[in-house]
Length: 249
Image (cartoon, rainbow, N blue to C red; front, side, top):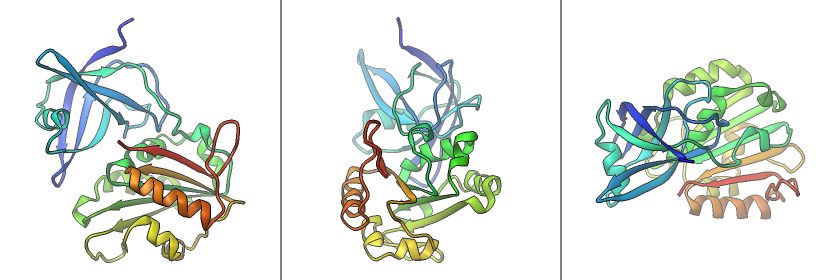
């Protein structure tokens, strides 16, 4: 069975460099919000592919990916320069367990991300559904280097209106000061309790679950702090815990 199908480019949204979003239309198999798939192109007879998470809800007609342009990345250069109606390959199946279905019921759900790793959270929150009701509060954090790299403001606004007091969104910047933003790296902000003080919700193993998605360094450092300072444990299917992780490259 051929697991790949053709996707037609609908739009390439160019945010402040190096960020962009690719919107395509393709016939793929049903997926769960929070999952990822694979995109591919052929160059010199060789298939070049990479995994990307969906930004869109599974209910949406079009498929969207949030991508960072990489200077020495063959695939991202090609994707960045695509035009409307161009064709690429997309895997029909979706992968991953970074979904609400795999998160146990708890009072506070923390969605922590760096850069484009906010994508799967936007998919989950736009989709909503009955599973989201098992959380009293959802706290979404997105960390970037500069203020200009905060995107999807309209979608975040719609999510905020949809969930009202159930949803909290906070921005984190590491390279410049920004009004109403937290300044620094996620691990350091957790060590100093600055995130919790800003949100006015405190992490503890009895009522908190942490979803971590982003660069491997952030995941490693944050996981260590959550384990050592907060006594949280990695969540496994056969051994429930408080931390669910997904590396973003």
